[in-house]
Length: 124
Image (tube, rainbow, N blue to C red):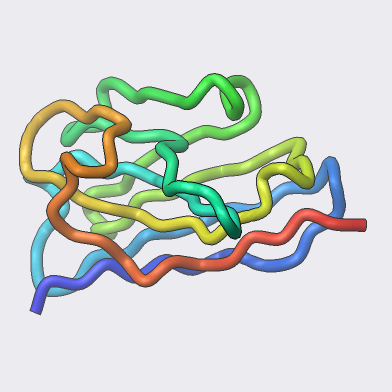
């Protein structure tokens, strides 16, 4: 069974940091580009960042550039999202998703497999 599981979410104060993990089971991530998306209450799901299959390139939403960093460790079958300088507007459920192929784009409908999400809350 192909499965993606996110972890690492939680409650953090503004300016703080979190590292999200996306672990795959039932398949190897070697053949997939991976994206991170988020959805805040009452809003549509939006792209945050994605990384190419081999990790050579990454894309970021303008709202997180310079604060978030995506990385992957194919040996561990895991992708990470390091989030620094967090703001209240970063509060959302964060999802990872996989699409078979070399490159990635931040378009929700592109992705084939999704995790269940992890809650990130930025509040004082």
